[in-house]
Picture 1 (cartoon, rainbow, N blue to C red):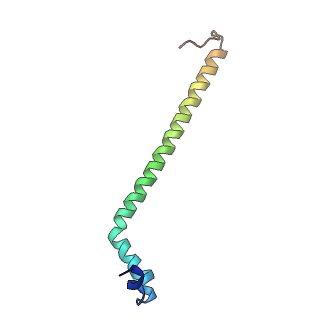
Picture 2: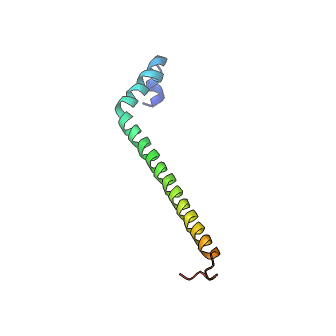
Picture 3: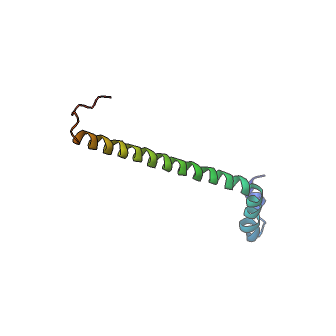
Length: 77
């Protein structure tokens, strides 16, 4: 029996309101956990990008100020 045959005789409110409400009731916690995990990962990724960008900015700023203040022009690590 195909899913289309099962839903054929049902009223519209059952197909479009009751069944999605039951799905959200049963799987709502799982759906919210997955969305929360995804948002958490995106936030951590953006935080990492901001921290790396800030570190690169500070290091370049420090290197340009130290080389222009009279030190030798060669950058020896």
